[in-house]
Image 1 (tube, rainbow, N blue to C red):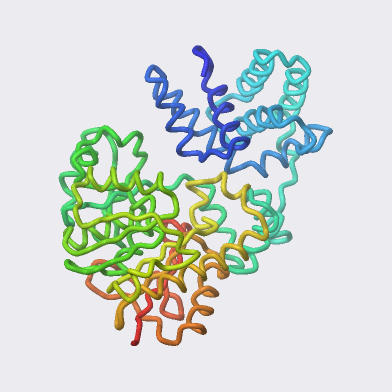
Image 2 (cartoon, rainbow, N blue to C red):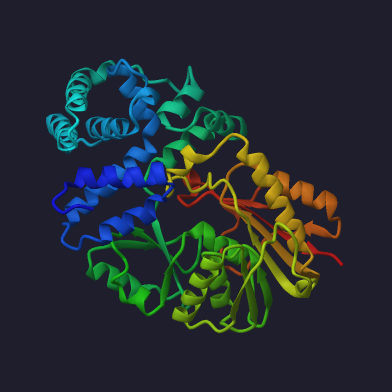
Length: 451
């Protein structure tokens, strides 16, 4: 990026990378902000707020744009639409930024791009919005729940309809939670003593609290940049959401266990399992992509883990023959729609297509069926997805049990590390929710092979 550009221009550049080039918000933000060590923390905070805010509130912003611009958003030039969204977000959602400043900075961006016509349109439309925003007629939850979930909740309409169909009135709280920043959570790699970590965080002005649901987990308030902390550099702790930690606890590996993780990258659950096993036993971590396997190898070496071995494999096709009935435990953390992590990755809510759920559920079923062949008699198979949809959760398990009567659902193991009751479904499986548990939305089932 060129030197001397403003925080708002950086935000636009990042949004372009995300929307037009398929980038992921967290990675592009880290890459762009990391290249400018002279950028102030205030500007970094503004860039981050603008990027995530525009991505999360996109449908709300377009609703407002339709109110003040004669053209439909989809008929505007993509770059102009991004500029307008940026200005509208500041006017509607950032109270600390005066409307006049939001208008003038947006117009200035257009002028710096040599777009005089865009500058005139932005100036007129944003001034009109600032003056008349109280006249916007937002959809009401009671009279139009789908409209509310689509516009206020800011989702594609088909997703809003799906959420309402599957979880009813809870969908309101779900989408509202999805538009709030997600907490950062740590887990201790050395047992449950979090005091030293909390002390180090406090010395940098970061408040934290121990999780009341997952033993050894720590919730952080406004964490900022964590890479400089000693507990991460020397691998005493790892960043991992509580819901993700729950999946490994559901598997419940012990020292000496043989474990196959069939969709392992980026490795959070693999490395958590190795810690629970005290790096004793055998973990084979599979993934489809060689680059991800290499990244896992580097991280395992950094963490000093010797029990983890990696291998490239496509589990949607078949199980490697040498793995047949070779493991006491098998973990399938399958590729999914990520509807449970939209607060962390808001760009994914706009990339999903209606037919994706059907294709994903078929893929998940193939991987799960192939992975089942690796489970020893009396062994454990855990299936999980960071999705809230039944198609990727209960329906996959139901279809699997119909085809594999040698497996049955088994409730979580109680070792006093997890309060399982808040997560249990009526069928003995687990679900976590952003709006109920303030953690990512996951589905998981623990299965036992009978023979």
